[in-house]
Amino acid sequence: MNYQKLSQKDKKYLWHPFTQQQEWIADKDITIITKGKGTFLYDAKGKKYLDGVSSLWCNVHGHQVPEIDRAIQKQLKKIAHSTLLGASNEPAILLAEKLVKLAPKGLTRVFYSDSGSEANEIAAKMAFQYWQQKKPAKPKKNLFLTVREGYHGDTIGSVSLGGVDLFHQIFGPMLFKTLKVKSPHDYSSRKVSNTQWLKDCVKEAEAVFKKYGSRLAAVHMEPLMEGAGGMLAHPWGYLKAIRRLCDKYEVLLILDEVATGFGRTGTLFACEQEGVRPDILCLAKNLTGGYLPLAATLTTEKVYKAFLGAFESTRTFYHGHTFTGNQLACAAALANLELMEKEEFLANIEKSSQMLQEFLEPIVAHPHVADVRLRGMMGGIELVKDKTHDIPYGYGEKMGYRVCAEAKKLGVLIRPLGNVIVLMPPLAITRKNLMRLIEVISLSIHRATKD
Ligand SMILES: *Cc1c(COP(=O)(O)O)cnc(C)c1O
Image 1 (tube, rainbow, N blue to C red):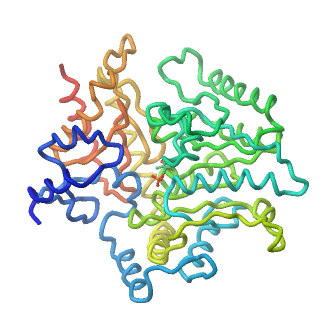
Image 2: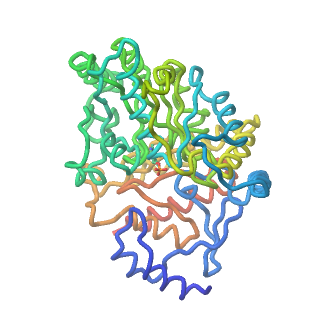
Image 3: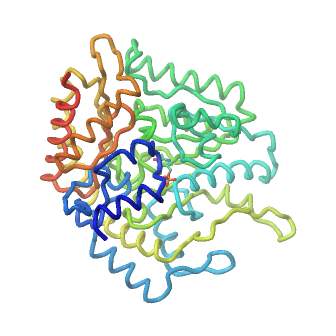
């Protein structure tokens, strides 16, 4: 179907996620993707774009990857889907084995779902039920401690755990209460040294543990860098300190590695960089290489065992989705992880990350760039209206969107988070294309911010 017809039908029938539809409908040049190859996307007008956001942070090896294509086609010749309720299947079994092998030590059980939001809901419900059922039970441990600016998805449980006011505030009355500590990231208002800042943040967390330790079921957080909250990097040592507090006060640590997992921050999992092992780990984006929806919540034997008992004990984890353990998705994930296991995968990320770092250095000096943050291949460039007086662009100024609109003209698709330009290229991007991405972003910032 031609572009005009598709565009008309889109505007007539679709409702896009995280999108002001009134603006979308007024846009005469909406992007309609028809094809992807490598790290490029092609639209219905025949234009080619660099996939600068990894199709929303999930594409790893590019589009039309022969190994993943073949794995899905092979699986399709057998069966697309059968349920994991009361039956099992080969790709789900083999993928669980592989995930346990790759994940931080101690995580030995895999519970599947379809999205990062669900992986986080499952983690929270698992932790809650664990304390009700472990022997001896500690039913009073039913509170969650979370970090402000955290993002764990858009379902109600995940929103309860989240702390991004713009997305979450309106739903306040629908949410369960959580305890919150400040995000350890705070570049603008920070007047103290890094060491002092880390101390202050840990002290705040410690005070909550002291007061509520016996009531805390779990700490639920993103490690190293909070993604959707604005690419907010945490100081080194914060995660380790939280793990220590969790151990001291007998609290579970749930890490949401939906964004950071599978190489994004330079190691297979971000928590490895702090030598931390969670009790529950949430994975989704990147799991199938960006091909199909699939998520996993991993946990320890200790947590898992609290759910065992006779049928009539009703200790079962009563949770599951229709497509839990879907064969096509698991087959894609297996092929994706096999590619990741090759030695050059992490080595390449390290090289690309170094290159990114070098390219970003001059951008910091730009009069409208307040801050540049990078962890591996996950980063953000924060724009500011008045650098000297630390005055941000107003929400209505749409500066992030304006930069992205300039980038689109130059053949690069990216998506901002408020005034933060997100750096999330496909992990296997070539150095040449990475250079192109950075050049276009710099030029777009320049064009959009010049008065
Ligand atoms: C994207 C994201 C989620 C939500 O995942 P969905 O698959 O979009 O539901 C949760 N946590 C983090 C850290 C994310 O980046």
